[in-house]
Every structure is written in structure tokens, then in C-alpha cells.
Image 1 (cartoon, helix red, strand yellow):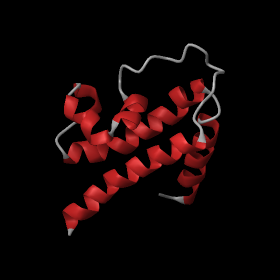
Image 2 (tube, rainbow, N blue to C red):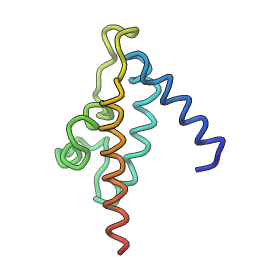
Image 3 (cartoon, rainbow, N blue to C red):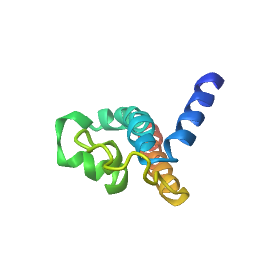
Image 4 (tube, helix red, strand yellow):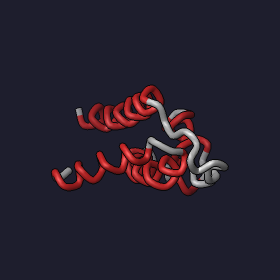
Length: 104
């Protein structure tokens, strides 16, 4: 990732976690883009509705990136707290670890 991309990603994440609308419209697309390569390595896609996608991502990450996720009822409602974000990052790292293990 280039420095300018990393800065953009950081700004989007910071903005995205403040309010529920930011989680849905800013953070969610970034996460969906981030999980697609890991799913593709398993022959899966977010768009297919395969139940194995939820298993691969884990419930919390799946709830954020699922294609049929509804818009928040209160756009200014709470976004994500630090613990939620840390769990999501851990799940993304676990997906990356799977890739590293496959290359060994």
C-alpha cells in the first residue's frame, strides 16, 4: 500500500467508526474490498450468498460486509467502538494469515 493510500484508508476508518452511517458507507466498502481476495482464494464471493462466506469471515465481519446489510435506522447513531474495530482487524489478519500459510 502506498503512503497516500494508507493515509486515505486511515482517514476513512477514523471517520467511518464515529457514526453508524460512516460504518455503513465508508468503512463497509473498504472492508468488503479487503476480504474479496481471501474469499476468492477459497472460490467464494460476497455476492453469491454462499453460507461458507459467513463461516470464512466470522459473524461480526460478515455482518459488516454482507451485501444485504440494511442502512442504519439512525445515521448519527453510534458507530464502532475500539473493541469492535480491534476484533474486525484481528479477523482480517487471520484471513491474511491463511494466505501466508498457503505459501509455506
